[in-house]
Image 1 (cartoon, rainbow, N blue to C red):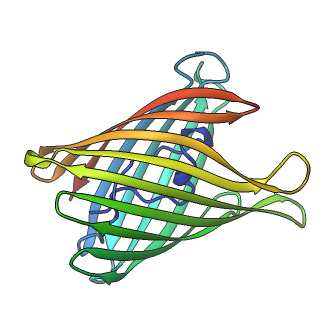
Image 2: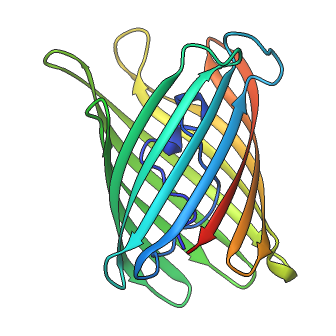
Image 3: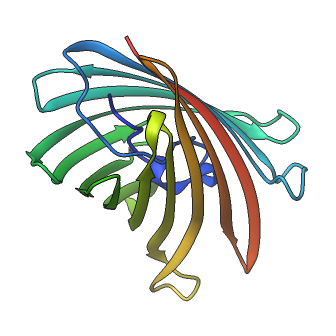
Length: 229
């Protein structure tokens, strides 16, 4: 099963798309993965600036190492007004599957014309591991205009008996600054707990500290279910 990919998901709840902290594994053959996520950003200031997000992901294994997914998401402000929807699709390839080192490559696109390509390097040791995601995104900013951004996410995780997993990650974003150049800044810090519900269903919980810009910090939560079909 995939542990949620990030077409634009890497940008946390502030982008209007939910995601969960986890590692990536190929889908089983056929339509074999179904995921649901719900999130709320702006816990410390419920208002029109808050955001509610819902997302569904359907994944299919094409070969032993190639998988595909489609996503449908909707977001609105804290008053459930001014809603927006987003549809996306993508592919990912497990290029290296070693005893302790995995390398995944992925690409995705969605409504609005944005395109993302990325890689995930996962070093899985005895009961714990380190992971690095790197993603480059090109988005339409108007007729003949494009914006470019690079997202990095170092992640650490620890597994316990019974399938319980603790994860923590820092999201970094390198994109346009106010003075017209580019700058690197953190966009979110996230901590999560993943746990098995039954044999083929995993529960996801996550807490986010979000950098909303202009030295303002927000908090958010998300929950989800990952089901192997």
